[in-house]
Image (cartoon, rainbow, N blue to C red; front, side):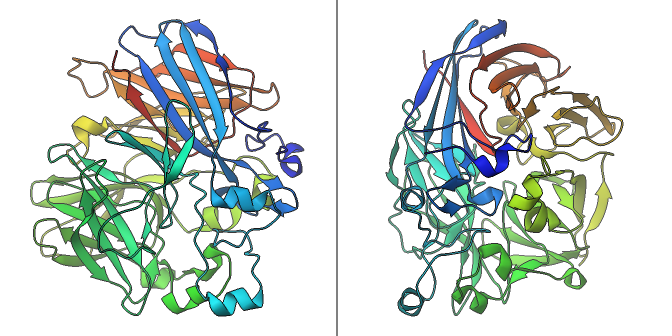
Length: 476
Protein backbone atom coordinates (compact mmCIF):
# COMPACT_ATOMS: atom_id res chain seq x y z
CA UNK A 1 0.00 0.00 0.00
CA UNK A 2 1.45 3.36 -0.96
CA UNK A 3 1.03 6.76 0.62
CA UNK A 4 -1.39 9.42 -0.55
CA UNK A 5 0.78 10.96 -3.24
CA UNK A 6 -1.88 13.34 -4.56
CA UNK A 7 -1.95 15.09 -1.17
CA UNK A 8 1.75 15.05 -0.35
CA UNK A 9 2.41 18.25 -2.30
CA UNK A 10 0.40 20.14 0.30
CA UNK A 11 1.74 20.55 3.81
CA UNK A 12 -1.26 18.83 5.31
CA UNK A 13 -1.52 16.17 8.02
CA UNK A 14 -3.52 13.85 5.79
CA UNK A 15 -0.94 11.85 3.81
CA UNK A 16 -0.02 8.67 5.66
CA UNK A 17 3.36 6.97 5.59
CA UNK A 18 1.75 3.58 6.14
CA UNK A 19 2.96 1.02 3.61
CA UNK A 20 1.87 -2.36 4.91
CA UNK A 21 1.19 -4.33 8.08
CA UNK A 22 1.61 -3.16 11.68
CA UNK A 23 4.44 -0.92 12.78
CA UNK A 24 5.41 -0.43 16.39
CA UNK A 25 8.20 0.83 18.60
CA UNK A 26 9.15 2.85 21.65
CA UNK A 27 8.65 6.62 21.57
CA UNK A 28 11.18 9.24 22.60
CA UNK A 29 9.84 10.79 25.80
CA UNK A 30 10.45 14.34 26.99
CA UNK A 31 9.16 15.38 30.38
CA UNK A 32 7.50 13.02 32.85
CA UNK A 33 4.07 11.46 32.56
CA UNK A 34 2.20 11.45 35.91
CA UNK A 35 2.65 8.34 38.06
CA UNK A 36 -1.11 7.76 38.03
CA UNK A 37 -1.39 7.94 34.22
CA UNK A 38 -0.98 4.40 32.94
CA UNK A 39 -2.98 2.98 30.06
CA UNK A 40 -3.58 2.88 26.32
CA UNK A 41 -4.92 5.54 23.96
CA UNK A 42 -6.42 3.98 20.81
CA UNK A 43 -7.54 6.07 17.87
CA UNK A 44 -8.86 5.52 14.37
CA UNK A 45 -8.18 7.86 11.45
CA UNK A 46 -8.69 8.28 7.68
CA UNK A 47 -5.22 7.44 6.32
CA UNK A 48 -4.95 6.14 2.75
CA UNK A 49 -6.44 8.40 0.08
CA UNK A 50 -5.46 6.36 -2.98
CA UNK A 51 -4.61 2.75 -3.75
CA UNK A 52 -4.21 0.77 -6.97
CA UNK A 53 -6.40 3.02 -9.10
CA UNK A 54 -8.91 3.78 -6.35
CA UNK A 55 -9.10 7.27 -4.86
CA UNK A 56 -11.03 8.76 -1.99
CA UNK A 57 -12.74 12.05 -2.85
CA UNK A 58 -13.57 12.99 0.74
CA UNK A 59 -11.75 13.01 4.08
CA UNK A 60 -14.40 10.68 5.53
CA UNK A 61 -13.67 8.05 2.86
CA UNK A 62 -9.90 7.60 3.18
CA UNK A 63 -9.10 4.05 4.23
CA UNK A 64 -8.96 3.75 7.99
CA UNK A 65 -6.03 2.93 10.18
CA UNK A 66 -5.69 2.36 13.91
CA UNK A 67 -2.91 3.58 16.13
CA UNK A 68 -2.20 3.40 19.83
CA UNK A 69 0.09 4.85 22.46
CA UNK A 70 0.58 2.89 25.68
CA UNK A 71 1.93 4.83 28.64
CA UNK A 72 3.82 2.09 30.48
CA UNK A 73 5.84 4.17 32.96
CA UNK A 74 6.50 7.85 33.57
CA UNK A 75 9.20 7.82 30.88
CA UNK A 76 8.32 4.90 28.62
CA UNK A 77 5.63 4.97 25.93
CA UNK A 78 5.19 2.30 23.25
CA UNK A 79 3.26 2.84 20.05
CA UNK A 80 1.68 0.83 17.25
CA UNK A 81 -0.13 1.47 13.98
CA UNK A 82 -2.06 -0.90 11.75
CA UNK A 83 -4.40 -0.61 8.80
CA UNK A 84 -8.03 -1.39 9.47
CA UNK A 85 -8.93 -4.70 7.84
CA UNK A 86 -12.28 -3.88 6.22
CA UNK A 87 -14.13 -5.09 3.15
CA UNK A 88 -13.70 -1.61 1.68
CA UNK A 89 -9.92 -1.74 2.17
CA UNK A 90 -9.68 -5.13 0.49
CA UNK A 91 -11.84 -3.91 -2.41
CA UNK A 92 -9.67 -0.80 -2.80
CA UNK A 93 -6.62 -3.03 -3.14
CA UNK A 94 -8.33 -4.42 -6.24
CA UNK A 95 -9.12 -0.92 -7.51
CA UNK A 96 -12.82 -1.33 -6.75
CA UNK A 97 -15.27 0.44 -4.44
CA UNK A 98 -18.79 -1.06 -4.75
CA UNK A 99 -19.81 0.39 -1.39
CA UNK A 100 -21.90 3.39 -0.40
CA UNK A 101 -19.34 5.94 0.76
CA UNK A 102 -19.67 9.48 2.04
CA UNK A 103 -18.24 11.53 -0.82
CA UNK A 104 -16.54 9.08 -3.19
CA UNK A 105 -18.28 7.70 -6.30
CA UNK A 106 -19.59 4.15 -6.10
CA UNK A 107 -18.27 1.84 -8.80
CA UNK A 108 -21.21 -0.43 -9.59
CA UNK A 109 -22.43 -1.96 -12.81
CA UNK A 110 -25.94 -1.24 -14.06
CA UNK A 111 -26.85 -4.88 -13.38
CA UNK A 112 -25.64 -4.55 -9.79
CA UNK A 113 -27.74 -1.41 -9.38
CA UNK A 114 -30.86 -3.21 -10.64
CA UNK A 115 -30.33 -6.29 -8.47
CA UNK A 116 -29.28 -4.28 -5.42
CA UNK A 117 -30.92 -0.80 -5.58
CA UNK A 118 -29.59 0.28 -2.19
CA UNK A 119 -25.81 -0.25 -2.20
CA UNK A 120 -24.04 -2.03 0.64
CA UNK A 121 -22.80 0.51 3.18
CA UNK A 122 -19.13 1.02 3.90
CA UNK A 123 -17.43 -0.75 6.82
CA UNK A 124 -14.49 1.65 6.69
CA UNK A 125 -14.74 2.43 10.42
CA UNK A 126 -12.48 5.48 10.53
CA UNK A 127 -14.55 7.82 12.75
CA UNK A 128 -14.36 6.56 16.33
CA UNK A 129 -13.26 3.66 18.50
CA UNK A 130 -14.89 3.03 21.87
CA UNK A 131 -14.55 0.53 24.67
CA UNK A 132 -17.73 -1.53 25.08
CA UNK A 133 -17.16 -3.64 28.16
CA UNK A 134 -14.40 -6.07 27.24
CA UNK A 135 -14.88 -5.28 23.54
CA UNK A 136 -13.43 -2.40 21.52
CA UNK A 137 -15.56 -1.26 18.58
CA UNK A 138 -14.42 0.82 15.60
CA UNK A 139 -17.30 2.86 14.22
CA UNK A 140 -18.32 4.84 11.20
CA UNK A 141 -21.82 6.23 10.48
CA UNK A 142 -23.37 3.22 8.79
CA UNK A 143 -24.85 -0.07 9.97
CA UNK A 144 -21.42 -1.73 10.00
CA UNK A 145 -19.04 -1.74 12.94
CA UNK A 146 -15.80 -3.66 13.52
CA UNK A 147 -14.51 -5.39 16.64
CA UNK A 148 -10.88 -4.56 17.43
CA UNK A 149 -8.18 -6.15 19.59
CA UNK A 150 -6.75 -3.12 21.46
CA UNK A 151 -3.43 -4.86 22.20
CA UNK A 152 -2.58 -5.85 18.61
CA UNK A 153 -4.99 -3.52 16.73
CA UNK A 154 -6.08 -6.55 14.70
CA UNK A 155 -9.59 -6.49 13.25
CA UNK A 156 -11.60 -9.36 14.73
CA UNK A 157 -14.63 -9.07 12.47
CA UNK A 158 -17.97 -7.32 12.14
CA UNK A 159 -20.11 -6.60 15.17
CA UNK A 160 -23.36 -8.57 14.86
CA UNK A 161 -26.33 -7.55 17.00
CA UNK A 162 -28.81 -10.23 18.02
CA UNK A 163 -32.08 -8.33 18.21
CA UNK A 164 -35.05 -7.39 16.07
CA UNK A 165 -33.75 -4.06 14.78
CA UNK A 166 -33.12 -3.89 11.02
CA UNK A 167 -29.65 -4.98 9.95
CA UNK A 168 -29.46 -1.98 7.62
CA UNK A 169 -30.03 0.61 10.36
CA UNK A 170 -27.32 3.28 10.37
CA UNK A 171 -25.83 4.07 13.78
CA UNK A 172 -23.93 7.15 14.89
CA UNK A 173 -20.27 6.82 15.82
CA UNK A 174 -20.93 8.79 19.03
CA UNK A 175 -22.75 6.55 21.50
CA UNK A 176 -23.30 7.94 24.99
CA UNK A 177 -22.71 6.02 28.20
CA UNK A 178 -25.12 6.28 31.10
CA UNK A 179 -22.67 5.45 33.89
CA UNK A 180 -25.35 5.27 36.59
CA UNK A 181 -27.35 2.63 34.70
CA UNK A 182 -24.40 0.95 32.93
CA UNK A 183 -25.92 1.23 29.47
CA UNK A 184 -24.68 2.53 26.14
CA UNK A 185 -27.22 4.72 24.32
CA UNK A 186 -27.19 5.53 20.63
CA UNK A 187 -29.35 6.74 17.74
CA UNK A 188 -30.10 4.75 14.62
CA UNK A 189 -31.55 5.83 11.28
CA UNK A 190 -33.98 3.48 9.55
CA UNK A 191 -34.57 4.13 5.84
CA UNK A 192 -37.71 2.67 4.35
CA UNK A 193 -41.42 3.05 3.79
CA UNK A 194 -41.60 4.27 7.40
CA UNK A 195 -38.33 6.09 7.92
CA UNK A 196 -37.50 7.00 11.49
CA UNK A 197 -34.84 7.87 14.02
CA UNK A 198 -34.54 5.27 16.77
CA UNK A 199 -33.07 5.77 20.23
CA UNK A 200 -31.79 2.49 21.64
CA UNK A 201 -29.67 1.24 24.52
CA UNK A 202 -27.77 -1.88 25.52
CA UNK A 203 -25.35 -3.06 28.18
CA UNK A 204 -21.75 -2.48 26.97
CA UNK A 205 -20.42 -5.73 25.55
CA UNK A 206 -23.93 -7.19 25.11
CA UNK A 207 -25.11 -7.22 21.49
CA UNK A 208 -28.83 -7.00 22.11
CA UNK A 209 -30.36 -3.54 21.83
CA UNK A 210 -33.58 -2.28 23.41
CA UNK A 211 -35.61 0.47 21.74
CA UNK A 212 -36.13 3.52 23.95
CA UNK A 213 -38.13 5.64 21.51
CA UNK A 214 -38.87 6.27 17.84
CA UNK A 215 -39.31 9.52 15.90
CA UNK A 216 -40.98 9.13 12.46
CA UNK A 217 -39.34 11.31 9.78
CA UNK A 218 -40.49 12.34 6.29
CA UNK A 219 -37.00 13.62 5.52
CA UNK A 220 -33.94 12.24 7.29
CA UNK A 221 -31.34 14.58 8.79
CA UNK A 222 -27.64 13.78 8.80
CA UNK A 223 -27.18 12.69 12.43
CA UNK A 224 -23.57 12.72 13.65
CA UNK A 225 -24.18 12.98 17.41
CA UNK A 226 -26.95 13.65 19.92
CA UNK A 227 -27.55 14.81 23.48
CA UNK A 228 -28.35 12.68 26.52
CA UNK A 229 -29.51 13.29 30.08
CA UNK A 230 -30.74 10.81 32.67
CA UNK A 231 -34.32 11.37 31.48
CA UNK A 232 -34.09 12.46 27.81
CA UNK A 233 -32.32 11.99 24.51
CA UNK A 234 -32.15 15.06 22.25
CA UNK A 235 -31.93 14.48 18.49
CA UNK A 236 -30.75 17.42 16.39
CA UNK A 237 -32.53 17.51 13.04
CA UNK A 238 -30.69 20.34 11.36
CA UNK A 239 -31.97 21.27 7.89
CA UNK A 240 -29.30 19.25 6.07
CA UNK A 241 -31.53 16.35 5.18
CA UNK A 242 -32.55 13.85 2.53
CA UNK A 243 -35.64 12.30 1.00
CA UNK A 244 -35.41 8.55 1.73
CA UNK A 245 -36.36 7.67 -1.86
CA UNK A 246 -33.30 9.44 -3.26
CA UNK A 247 -31.06 6.97 -1.40
CA UNK A 248 -32.02 4.34 -3.98
CA UNK A 249 -29.60 5.95 -6.41
CA UNK A 250 -25.87 5.25 -6.38
CA UNK A 251 -24.77 8.81 -5.68
CA UNK A 252 -22.16 9.71 -3.13
CA UNK A 253 -23.86 9.72 0.27
CA UNK A 254 -23.40 13.45 0.89
CA UNK A 255 -24.82 14.37 -2.53
CA UNK A 256 -28.25 13.05 -1.56
CA UNK A 257 -28.54 15.72 1.14
CA UNK A 258 -29.91 19.23 0.65
CA UNK A 259 -29.38 22.33 2.78
CA UNK A 260 -32.78 23.90 3.44
CA UNK A 261 -32.20 26.70 5.97
CA UNK A 262 -35.74 28.02 5.57
CA UNK A 263 -36.92 24.90 7.42
CA UNK A 264 -34.90 25.74 10.53
CA UNK A 265 -33.55 23.20 13.01
CA UNK A 266 -35.82 20.81 14.89
CA UNK A 267 -34.89 19.36 18.27
CA UNK A 268 -36.65 16.08 19.04
CA UNK A 269 -36.70 15.41 22.79
CA UNK A 270 -37.31 11.72 23.53
CA UNK A 271 -38.40 10.69 27.02
CA UNK A 272 -36.21 7.71 27.99
CA UNK A 273 -38.86 6.30 30.33
CA UNK A 274 -41.93 6.43 28.07
CA UNK A 275 -40.52 6.80 24.54
CA UNK A 276 -42.76 9.83 23.94
CA UNK A 277 -41.23 12.72 22.02
CA UNK A 278 -41.83 16.42 21.54
CA UNK A 279 -40.35 18.76 18.95
CA UNK A 280 -38.93 22.24 19.46
CA UNK A 281 -37.71 24.56 16.70
CA UNK A 282 -34.49 26.57 16.52
CA UNK A 283 -32.64 28.68 13.99
CA UNK A 284 -30.87 26.88 11.13
CA UNK A 285 -27.44 25.49 11.97
CA UNK A 286 -25.26 22.51 11.15
CA UNK A 287 -23.94 20.41 14.03
CA UNK A 288 -21.33 17.67 14.08
CA UNK A 289 -20.79 17.45 17.82
CA UNK A 290 -22.81 17.98 20.93
CA UNK A 291 -20.77 19.03 23.97
CA UNK A 292 -23.13 18.17 26.82
CA UNK A 293 -26.83 18.09 27.66
CA UNK A 294 -28.35 18.64 31.09
CA UNK A 295 -31.33 19.94 33.04
CA UNK A 296 -31.13 23.38 34.66
CA UNK A 297 -34.21 23.86 36.78
CA UNK A 298 -37.12 23.18 34.43
CA UNK A 299 -35.05 24.02 31.34
CA UNK A 300 -33.24 21.52 29.13
CA UNK A 301 -29.79 22.74 28.02
CA UNK A 302 -28.07 21.41 24.89
CA UNK A 303 -24.54 22.73 24.28
CA UNK A 304 -23.32 22.16 20.72
CA UNK A 305 -20.63 23.27 18.30
CA UNK A 306 -22.67 24.96 15.57
CA UNK A 307 -21.74 25.88 12.00
CA UNK A 308 -23.74 28.36 9.93
CA UNK A 309 -24.12 25.82 7.13
CA UNK A 310 -22.81 22.39 6.06
CA UNK A 311 -20.12 23.69 3.68
CA UNK A 312 -17.45 22.22 5.95
CA UNK A 313 -18.61 18.71 5.08
CA UNK A 314 -19.86 19.39 1.55
CA UNK A 315 -16.84 21.32 0.29
CA UNK A 316 -13.95 21.87 2.70
CA UNK A 317 -13.45 18.18 3.52
CA UNK A 318 -13.35 17.13 -0.13
CA UNK A 319 -9.96 16.43 -1.69
CA UNK A 320 -9.97 19.80 -3.42
CA UNK A 321 -10.37 21.48 -0.04
CA UNK A 322 -7.75 19.33 1.70
CA UNK A 323 -5.16 20.32 -0.88
CA UNK A 324 -5.43 23.85 0.51
CA UNK A 325 -4.45 22.61 3.98
CA UNK A 326 -6.39 21.77 7.11
CA UNK A 327 -10.05 22.78 6.74
CA UNK A 328 -11.16 25.58 9.01
CA UNK A 329 -13.08 23.74 11.70
CA UNK A 330 -14.39 26.73 13.58
CA UNK A 331 -17.94 26.10 14.78
CA UNK A 332 -19.13 28.25 17.66
CA UNK A 333 -19.85 26.94 21.15
CA UNK A 334 -23.61 27.46 21.25
CA UNK A 335 -26.21 26.86 23.95
CA UNK A 336 -29.72 25.77 23.05
CA UNK A 337 -32.18 26.30 25.91
CA UNK A 338 -35.48 24.43 25.73
CA UNK A 339 -38.04 25.96 28.08
CA UNK A 340 -41.22 24.19 29.25
CA UNK A 341 -44.25 24.98 27.12
CA UNK A 342 -42.30 26.87 24.45
CA UNK A 343 -42.07 25.73 20.85
CA UNK A 344 -38.80 27.49 20.06
CA UNK A 345 -35.42 27.12 21.75
CA UNK A 346 -33.35 30.10 22.87
CA UNK A 347 -29.92 30.25 21.19
CA UNK A 348 -26.84 31.79 22.81
CA UNK A 349 -23.18 31.86 21.76
CA UNK A 350 -21.13 31.14 24.87
CA UNK A 351 -17.65 32.30 23.87
CA UNK A 352 -15.83 33.96 20.98
CA UNK A 353 -13.66 31.77 18.78
CA UNK A 354 -14.40 28.38 17.26
CA UNK A 355 -13.03 24.91 17.89
CA UNK A 356 -13.91 21.27 17.25
CA UNK A 357 -13.68 17.80 18.85
CA UNK A 358 -15.04 18.82 22.28
CA UNK A 359 -14.12 17.03 25.48
CA UNK A 360 -15.47 17.31 29.04
CA UNK A 361 -14.95 15.40 32.29
CA UNK A 362 -17.34 12.87 30.81
CA UNK A 363 -17.76 10.36 33.63
CA UNK A 364 -18.56 13.09 36.15
CA UNK A 365 -20.28 15.82 34.11
CA UNK A 366 -22.07 14.10 31.23
CA UNK A 367 -25.77 14.83 31.65
CA UNK A 368 -24.96 17.30 34.43
CA UNK A 369 -24.04 21.01 34.39
CA UNK A 370 -20.41 21.49 33.38
CA UNK A 371 -18.02 24.40 33.59
CA UNK A 372 -15.07 23.40 31.40
CA UNK A 373 -14.81 22.28 27.78
CA UNK A 374 -11.62 21.44 25.90
CA UNK A 375 -11.21 21.13 22.15
CA UNK A 376 -8.93 21.35 19.13
CA UNK A 377 -8.62 24.77 17.49
CA UNK A 378 -8.17 23.75 13.88
CA UNK A 379 -7.08 27.01 12.22
CA UNK A 380 -7.55 29.10 15.41
CA UNK A 381 -9.39 32.38 15.41
CA UNK A 382 -7.46 35.65 15.51
CA UNK A 383 -6.15 36.37 18.99
CA UNK A 384 -5.17 32.78 19.79
CA UNK A 385 -1.56 31.85 20.42
CA UNK A 386 -1.15 30.63 16.86
CA UNK A 387 -0.62 27.17 15.40
CA UNK A 388 -3.17 24.39 15.45
CA UNK A 389 -3.57 23.51 19.07
CA UNK A 390 -5.76 22.95 22.09
CA UNK A 391 -8.27 25.29 23.75
CA UNK A 392 -9.87 25.35 27.19
CA UNK A 393 -13.16 27.17 27.68
CA UNK A 394 -14.59 28.28 31.02
CA UNK A 395 -18.32 28.35 30.22
CA UNK A 396 -19.26 30.17 33.43
CA UNK A 397 -16.85 33.05 32.86
CA UNK A 398 -16.88 33.03 29.06
CA UNK A 399 -13.08 32.77 29.04
CA UNK A 400 -10.84 30.87 26.66
CA UNK A 401 -7.21 29.75 26.88
CA UNK A 402 -5.10 28.33 24.08
CA UNK A 403 -2.04 26.13 23.66
CA UNK A 404 -0.34 26.41 20.28
CA UNK A 405 0.75 23.23 18.56
CA UNK A 406 3.54 24.98 16.68
CA UNK A 407 4.48 22.89 13.65
CA UNK A 408 2.28 20.05 14.91
CA UNK A 409 -1.41 19.76 14.06
CA UNK A 410 -2.98 18.60 17.31
CA UNK A 411 -6.24 16.69 17.24
CA UNK A 412 -8.99 15.80 19.71
CA UNK A 413 -7.98 16.25 23.36
CA UNK A 414 -9.20 13.48 25.66
CA UNK A 415 -9.63 14.42 29.32
CA UNK A 416 -8.28 11.84 31.78
CA UNK A 417 -9.20 12.65 35.41
CA UNK A 418 -6.68 12.22 38.23
CA UNK A 419 -7.78 9.41 40.55
CA UNK A 420 -9.16 10.92 43.72
CA UNK A 421 -9.41 14.39 42.20
CA UNK A 422 -12.40 16.49 43.22
CA UNK A 423 -12.17 19.44 40.82
CA UNK A 424 -13.80 19.23 37.39
CA UNK A 425 -10.51 20.12 35.66
CA UNK A 426 -8.16 18.02 37.83
CA UNK A 427 -6.51 15.79 35.25
CA UNK A 428 -4.60 15.76 31.98
CA UNK A 429 -5.46 16.13 28.32
CA UNK A 430 -4.07 13.60 25.85
CA UNK A 431 -3.77 14.71 22.22
CA UNK A 432 -1.96 13.31 19.20
CA UNK A 433 -0.37 15.62 16.66
CA UNK A 434 1.61 15.23 13.45
CA UNK A 435 4.34 17.26 11.77
CA UNK A 436 4.39 16.16 8.14
CA UNK A 437 7.41 18.29 7.27
CA UNK A 438 9.48 16.59 9.97
CA UNK A 439 7.88 13.18 9.28
CA UNK A 440 7.01 12.70 12.94
CA UNK A 441 4.08 12.55 15.34
CA UNK A 442 3.69 12.83 19.08
CA UNK A 443 1.42 12.11 21.99
CA UNK A 444 1.29 15.14 24.25
CA UNK A 445 -0.03 15.35 27.81
CA UNK A 446 -1.23 18.77 28.95
CA UNK A 447 -2.28 19.91 32.40
CA UNK A 448 -6.05 20.30 31.94
CA UNK A 449 -6.15 23.38 34.17
CA UNK A 450 -3.27 25.41 32.73
CA UNK A 451 -3.12 23.58 29.36
CA UNK A 452 0.65 23.66 29.65
CA UNK A 453 2.60 20.59 28.46
CA UNK A 454 3.66 17.99 31.02
CA UNK A 455 5.22 15.36 28.78
CA UNK A 456 5.31 14.23 25.18
CA UNK A 457 6.24 11.04 23.34
CA UNK A 458 7.54 11.47 19.77
CA UNK A 459 7.64 8.79 17.06
CA UNK A 460 9.30 8.82 13.60
CA UNK A 461 5.98 8.48 11.73
CA UNK A 462 3.67 11.34 10.61
CA UNK A 463 0.35 9.87 11.73
CA UNK A 464 -2.66 11.21 9.81
CA UNK A 465 -5.01 13.65 11.50
CA UNK A 466 -7.86 11.56 12.85
CA UNK A 467 -11.21 12.17 14.45
CA UNK A 468 -11.78 10.30 17.71
CA UNK A 469 -10.47 7.68 20.09
CA UNK A 470 -10.59 6.36 23.65
CA UNK A 471 -8.23 5.99 26.60
CA UNK A 472 -8.40 3.01 28.91
CA UNK A 473 -6.47 2.84 32.15
CA UNK A 474 -4.10 -0.04 32.70
CA UNK A 475 -5.36 -2.75 35.05
CA UNK A 476 -1.93 -3.22 36.60
